[in-house]
Length: 315
Image (cartoon, rainbow, N blue to C red; front, top):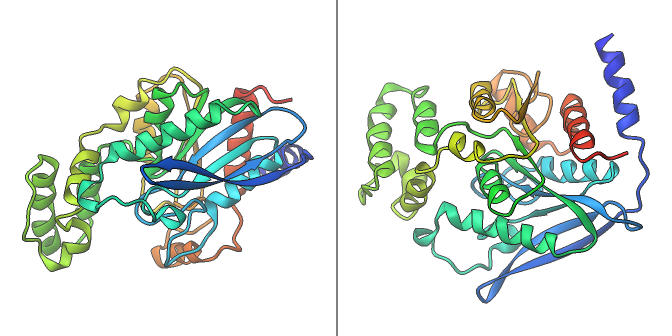
């Protein structure tokens, strides 16, 4: 019966027909620019628009990185467009087509990403083609998104696979599942960085994670508590989390939900970090990260569309 109900809802939500248009947008930054892809869902009238913010590391606007292609965020943008919601997804500074930004890693701070997201929102608010503005943040983009949504007064906010604790606590929890020898090296180092005590000599095993040039960024990120930031929002909020996410646990979504009474929590059974159906087995789960043919989890699509059609009052 549940599958039948989901199929009927899916048929209804995916049955809209819109005239779509795609554009490449640039956000000036210093002497260069950040690049994004704009999909206009309805070229005949105004539409709501979502700013989609990707996760950490070299993750680009489509949800991919140089080693893994899954197109998760591209699929999300296409899903929204099919249902009358425009979107802008972009490569964060230093990533993909925004790699032209001349900023040294040692000078990068978490607030830089928040500022960039806020500038994108300002640009979209100045565009008369759009009549409502929502923010969707995935993973690290969840915290970036909630802070930008508050600063620029977005209408709706969605967190997908977003941590509910500060970066240092999240990293510490991840290291606690590693062999004791690695814990003994990593956790004291992480605690120092969180306090602003930067370390020049880093064990080669951890160099890629805690290299000296990235430590100021980690410190700037660790100072922020997602629960404090989401509590500031007084707009419709959806928090989505999958049960087979091997990077962020369900407890993180629950912490975010508890921090704001306006939020709606949606736990998707069998969904992993890249929004696809995946088993709990780590090896099999990771295989989905490099398969762009796997569609978004159906229940994820239904949850996000139901929420948005209600929050935005789309007919």
